[in-house]
Length: 63
Image (cartoon, rainbow, N blue to C red; front, side, top):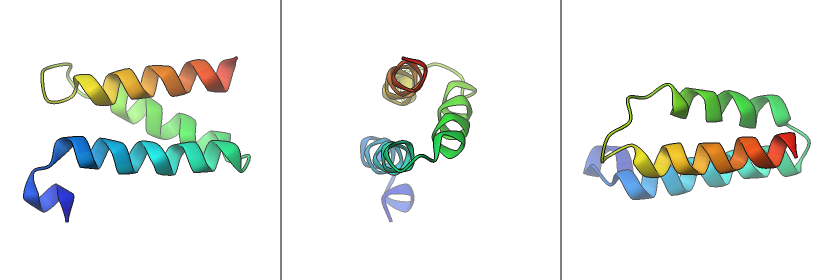
């Protein structure tokens, strides 16, 4: 629904929450795949938050 409404912040929030839940449940591969997919997006004003969240998650996964 957020995708259809164009609410990028909500999309990033929900998908990062799902990636975090996978990480906490031991699903590192799913979380890491999501992070890399977010970082593959061109960096601009609409994707900056997704990039920041993905970088933070990757740091957590590797830390």
